[in-house]
Length: 248
Image (cartoon, rainbow, N blue to C red; front, top):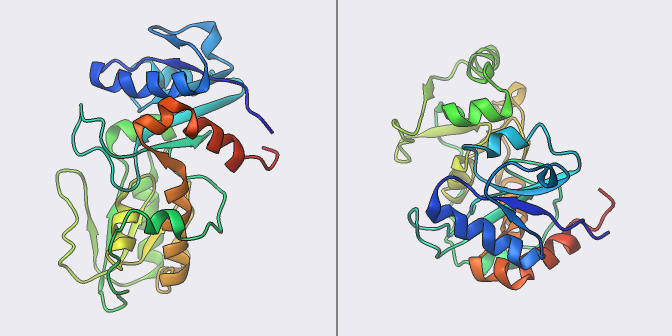
């Protein structure tokens, strides 16, 4: 199938506007400064902030969510180097799986030896901004309760201000909408995600996903990120149409 050409809403932050305009240029759509009825059918959005939040519940057909890449992402805000992810009707992952490792391997990211000798569970909740988008205000409390019901291991809560100490002996990372799952798997640490990529389950936390299943997630996600030039040239849009050509 071929998707309708989306229009784009400019983000509030000027450095981020180039990203959305590059994607829309490659699609052949239009860019709007403010909310407009033409954005309510098929829309491309950068990030979680500002007017973007008002569009998620209003989009009638498809929304394309653009954000920092899973791997080799832009090194700092305002930089246009690196990769940006594009997901369909989702804030993080896509449901297609089974991709080869080819694109991931092209990034030359070393993978650490798989670890099963950790002892503690590290939970990484969504940040406050993500909570407002995904309607998961009770996620941390519910996750803590489920984890405690299924393991006696010590539990640590990690946030943006209290980052994961990868030198610790971690049994498993638990998250919802964070790229920490990717960071964990690259480092050989098992991860469970409760939404979007749905890797493993809290009820089976004593048997978290192992190397083969976890590495496959990396291979899959690698196929949903592009450089700014690939967006602007239309390569990204053409590949998205090809990747999703399974009757959504």
